[in-house]
Image (cartoon, rainbow, N blue to C red; front, top):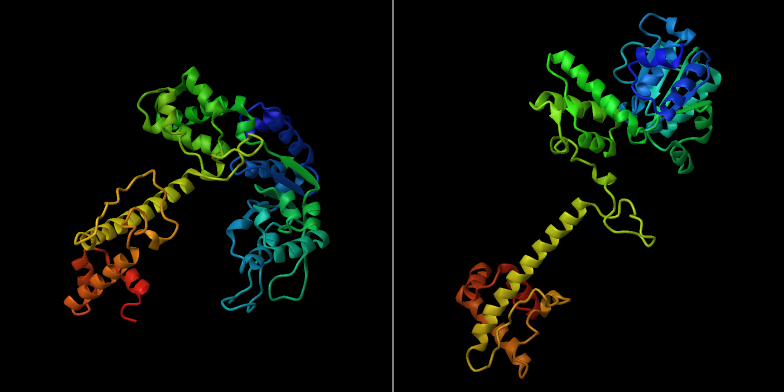
Length: 400
């Protein structure tokens, strides 16, 4: 079967050279029994390629409806994945009231598609390697190996080579799975295919819901092609369907399109701080981090200003008797003190600082006496916060 027929049969849209290369390789290796590793970002269609490989092999006739078994390795809990893949015998563990076949046994004679293989726990990687090398499985709780004939097609959206380098994926398993590698390019590397896919998805929606298809203005088409599409074909399909159903205007302008293309994950945002070479260094500071820091700093500054105002009022009352006092004027240009307890030092009576501290301590003691030791009422009497009062009590050793 040639590439054009494959594209029509599996509804594949696009003429990008990288996509056509992947399709051609899939067709060539489909009749073999070699293990295949499909790599590419989430949403590029790795599951479609597993079907192409299986359905163009002699294994497509194995067990009606059970020839291709798809398994998402990242969705199975680590504690049950061995049983899910290889099965278990009755009594193997609590709740195992009967024997059960695993996915490999169900796929015997056919193909098993192990999606997100990079998420497989290291302990299971060892057991999977043994299955691939010996063609045998051992169900959980059994001591007897069972022969199986399964062709493995694996897929991952992680950098599997980096996973091998970092020790998260076994090197020997990588080479065993990677007898044939197929790379599926992300949509942003297939810019010319984006308008074709948009037209196909909009036509499908129009036909399904009996409405006119949406069309793009030239500027909107350019905007669509420049969008990074981190969700790839899946994201493009979802957005096209949303616009088709929600918008009453059938001609889509950049203004309309922008309402649907505004979201980019934080980890994909360009860095706000360039590195020394003048190129944005990825993942240094995100908008969310800046906002959180600003909110946190703003809260701290507001608390500090409140304490400064409390202390200023108290000091003004203490100093109004027989000392000259110059009120402190807050300024956004003045640096904040390096320690919390230095608020009283600048611009306050320089001729007798110790006397002022004594008067402050005396005022606090008197306020506590007047309020019979009630700190909350004493703070209110002094027109300061309880937090400030507690700190001053500790500073002067009052009540210890």
